[in-house]
Image (cartoon, rainbow, N blue to C red):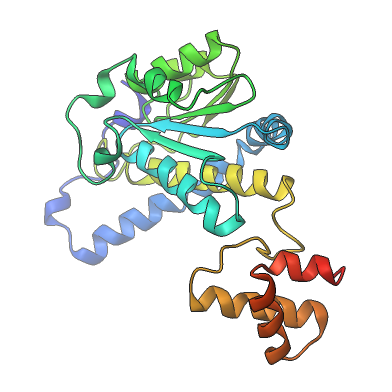
Length: 267
């Protein structure tokens, strides 16, 4: 039996109090970061390939089903507003298509050929990197996509919570995070999903920093899409140029970008 399907360490959940239940979940969640720390060398190795490819115009693709697919789409969708990149630089694909983001599409993950069809729409090439996300490590949709990508000379990686699973065979950079059984047996939206999200944060953030999308520790390329972000942008300019709020607001309105203001004044 795969690790993600092993029986929970806890039982009689329906007879536990709300506090007992959330305490169990919290106890297990504390173990996730420890397991993620163990795979930092594998994540680093992936980034050392990913960043040069993206600097040369390559893209980052995620494929997954269910929770794993949704996490990939979430990470991809946050890159444009956070780092100011185009929405085709990091692309998340889910088994069953966009309708599966909100509602499960029955048996969509069981099609071994669909992922490659989905990727082919984007003309994926050897300049790109494909990451398959599957807690179980055996999702057919993900396996098929990775296998075809490898056969076509595309760099591949995976994020799984089952060590030694089939998905790693088709990954140049397997990232395996054995977080163990879930509190609710087999519910990989819990610890496994948390582990996957943590690793995705590291990959996309590490890549964007490598691409020069952060200055110091600030998101100077963020999209100024609401008042909160406008205020953040003004504060960045005020601190970097040592100017008052009204001047920072004027400069930001004129340029429409924190980066452009800072570059203009060599800050």
